[in-house]
Image (tube, rainbow, N blue to C red):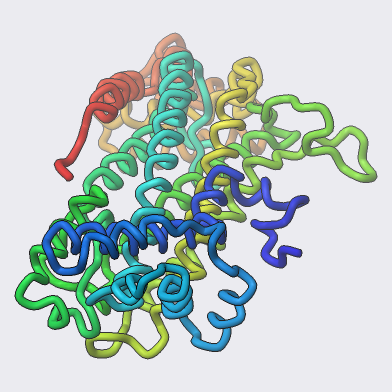
Length: 456
């Protein structure tokens, strides 16, 4: 039975998706090893490096031909998964042609290239889900461009904004991630073929031709030089995942806070039984939003592991490479799970505009104190205006009078602003600055992101 929660039947879909797990599961990984070995043999045969009959015979072996039990036992002994696979190929391919399998390659060539093929599939899933999330956020930003909301600083009401503005800040971050992934793809989707220490000595003088044809056949970029122990591109990918899930966790944090009973500005979509308590029947816990925060913590730990694993010795490392076998699949599956939760939560988000407006009113105008201060500052200076408005705010809080009354009761303020002017300045909708213009700018940028492609 599975041990890691992301692979268990009862917890797996909280932390990942079946689709992404299928990219990295055991059968898919072994199939990729075989695909890479077959491609190498086919290309070498085309270039006259090995007999065509050998490539044809190797191409005929599938995962069902392998003795997976014996294979697993040998991997545990050898410590790496390719030598036992090649040994089985040598036995299974008749007429001695199996001896041409893995010709001129090393274990890491096969594993790295197989991993890159898996990452290509994984990136396609991530790109699709990021596009879906962007569309959802763009719709929220457009729909609520003018829906008034309290902007908060250190968990306190600060200045009025709109919910569309808040959603647009989320959207802008997601779209930046989409661009980052496009820019990183050529670096990540690069094949590996270098032989024992990366010099392709076993395939000289045909090594570079074999490598380039091998990568081209697989649809991958061919490297300028072997990257056996320079793992920056794979580390970049996991750091990208950590950055992305951190953004999703930020969104989740906002949603959790906005869903508090005392705030009640949003609710996660209603699904019977979702978020219920075992003892409190009234509860509707923001499960999806909370999981965004949890997943990000785990992915960040995998990113740290990748940074540590990137410190490798000489031309072939003594063990840190193995860290990637755990960190890359786990972080990718977890990120897919986070995106799945974000799409579900935001796609069905219940927005309570009335609660947002009511919360704005709870400060009795204090949220617009800066508006009054900046208007006064034109006549009496900013710092003096700040001090006068601060005293009025404290007076309103201590006496229970309205903020407008406390402001109007100050002779110096009243000498500059009439009561009507004060009332106008304290209206939240009159002090949202360029919020709507910024929303519209983000929506224009979002329209360009889907068409953005980097070569390779």
